[in-house]
Length: 431
Ligand code: NAP
Ligand code: HSE
Picture: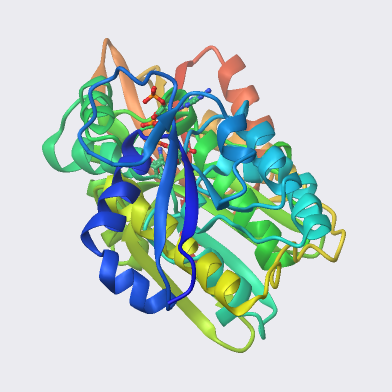
């Protein structure tokens, strides 16, 4: 057997601890797959005194230089999270000729171009399977297994925290804050959960997937984002009643204008395959010209699933090192496509309004919609709230721009007390 491959692990939180556990429990299996031994030599943390749920014989350090400058360390695994100093540490590692594995979508989505250029210049690997979909293989399938395809669409549930929350709200009728606290306690949520509930985490992930699927660099700024903070139990109940489920969707499609990339809550038919994706599970649905439809499903967050993807990347790099190859598959963004403005995107919409309960109100609302070329598929008067009538509308397919104008007009109408919710409906049957 050849010399042991040494790894420097940056971070020993949820994911880092999982990596240490897998490397310990599956050690001989992993070494046989690599054809040589691999060990975590050093671990970087912020606070070496902190009690940990895992033990290791690796050296615990607080200084990145002691890892980057260690000539024995060939692979650096970044599982610290956040943009900085993680991005700087990754760059230092690449420039020191170390292969890098990261789970950090913040860094990959924002600094991908710069980091891949550094990996290429230094002829080292840069792998990031865990950055999207936690334990689900999706980066490697898109880059390698589906490389023969022209991809038309990637659509998925890519944030475990919000899917867990929406599932709990729907099935157990729990309130938003309660279910968020549960997701945090389970280690699913980001350090700042605004990234999850605000849709930014999903946006970073779909930016990464869109860049790979459409071979053009898509960054966070290119993604239209709506989170789930406006979703109430009332909307979830109406969705159920109308035969839908509320999910936070991340969507990337190529259309006549360019690449259309967005994250928003949506009503999807209860019979849609994504409707059955519950709890912390994620699923990513891909349409390619040769493969047709493919769906990837699994745990999108959590200690062991995420560590599974990180450790697989370590194994892949170690195999490359053993075989004397590197930087085989780096940046695949060889095109420069336009981003479609969200105003041009079209879908049916669900709206919930509080209006005066008197004759002629529904007709006035229908004519306000009509003036913006918004046709109504269905209108249901539901219940009384504080003296007002609550009505639920589903529109036919309409552009985001026209829908926005219609909502603005509604908000200015004296008979409309409140536009409580506006949520897209992803349903091909409403045209
Ligand atoms: P975490 O539990 O907060 O752990 C972060 C670790 O990094 C801690 O050990 C912390 O040290 C260390 N660290 C942070 N900043 C540091 C600094 N400036 N210098 C030295 N050490 C530092 O985070 P996590 O949940 O494991 O997430 C890690 C990464 O994986 C993130 O990029 C996240 O987005 C990604 N990810 C997480 C999941 C998940 O389910 N958690 C899933 C997929 C991807 P101390 O322990 O001393 O504080
Ligand atoms: N906070 C993220 C989620 C972790 O809930 O999906 C996985 O990236």
